[in-house]
Image (cartoon, rainbow over all chains, first blue to last red; front, side, top):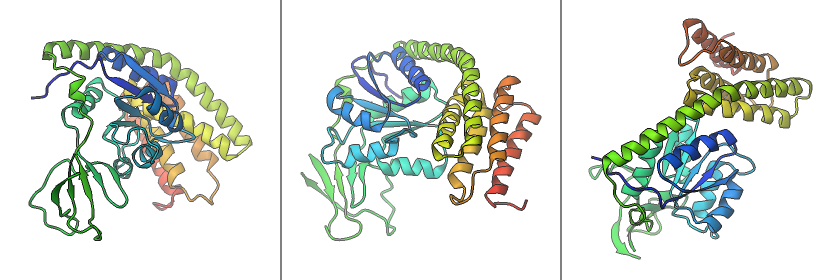
Length: 168
Length: 171
């Protein structure tokens, strides 16, 4: 049974170039109890604001210029100057094609929310981030939240990760 | 910090597993389900209010789309196409959220055409016009949800037209 949390102390950075969608998401977030919401209009602006506003969660659109959503996430995760490469990111987009979902996942998003936006859909993504902070995986070409949500310990195929526990 | 390392640092399966250092539970004390449900109801009501605002805004967006289409029809620059694409992309994202599912469908069809077309071929003015006019018709006739059979047939015809132009089916 899912738990419920007081979201009032969370800081959300909303990144969307569409003013109307910013209004929609802001109002829903406010009604969910979130008081600190800042706006960025594209990925470049958002990257700067991560370092100044210090959000807890980013809610991100896909299509923006000059820097779109996936490019922003890759920079957030991989750039040596990134203020917080572990920051949770919820991608909210009208794209629902499988390859788009995979592209967003491979860029390093934390949660994916397909439009139409629903209050329950947004709330459940926020709760998932609070409740189940996923471990991060670094490979030669990826850094981001573990893309395997279901642990299959019986899988023994060629793509299986092999490893041992160490302490960093 | 606990991590899981691959046994070999050289192999193609090399990876590092890092415990997530962000723990938002510290900032978010638990609340009762009834309190959360009241907040969700309030959020739902806010969404309904914005939906009413969307209806008046939609007409303005369509005026803008038709203006941009007229500009692009005269000057087929990439910049003019991108401007039009931006309006349709926004309509696609907003339509279904506010009950105009077929606007989202038509926007998806338009987006698929622009993304998958051969870039060395000119953009079909006729196909773009059909998409713009179909969105306007959905709004003018106030067609909500999945619409009637006629509206669905129009959207299906647009998808087929895109398939034909993309050489996915015989013309």
